[in-house]
Length: 354
Image 1: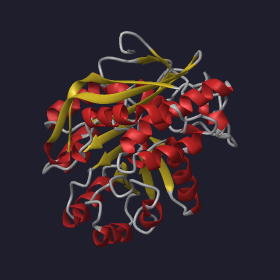
Image 2: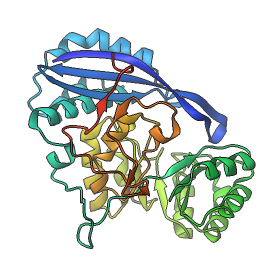
Image 3: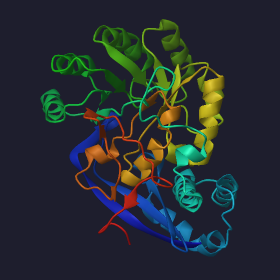
Image 4: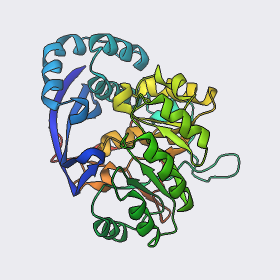
């Protein structure tokens, strides 16, 4: 295999802010490509400051280990992930990008989309026994309330995910609720104290909020026990559920988990996490780290296995680096059109490809 990689920088339509004042105007990502004959596989890993992940550092590691990666014979993507996991034990984002590209290349070689390689079916005519995959939400980052209303009205969508973690969370959701009857989910990104959450969750339940994602600090297990006992809204782990080892622990404190491909180190461990979560009776969401079309297509391949999905990175950006990911299937926004092309199911497009 021939390995190439580069940095990608895509602008957000609005500055994207989450709890604790973390804001970004662009998403920087590492893009990787494996070439083998006429086949190409692409992967992506976004740079995230609060995880201390930079594109520069990932590229340094790739340059250092380029030769040994290129010599690997891709005869089994799971075996490739184990190789990468041991090569980069402390770089799950980097492993994810390479694992994603490996699966994309494998799908090209096998002439199958990934969801079919995994033994799942993406129903084109949903029915009671073969339901429609979950609809993608649209995320509203933290802003003054009037600005959040403007963003909602500018982007009509069937499901909203609202970032919270402010002094005006309840006022915010109260005002947004005046402008839509559609489902609203909230994500605190670990921004509440236990006392805040115990007060805010009942108020959010009365406002018809569907679920709460990561209300407390990732290791505040005592507080999470209190919230789960309160049992007013489904609670989903994000920062508390990063790697495979976290799934079993989260089953004691949450109703579901949000799997991030980059944080868990790729598609390969995500498949195992879904299986374990089902065994433990957990609901499964797969979430976004503001990936572009490439990384979002990887999330989409899991849709037949998910209860909820948050893969709206391309919806939040003003430039698209790929083609083939359609968020409006049969005139229903957020319903992803089945990806039936090989591998990830999308094509990287100029001028973004290097």
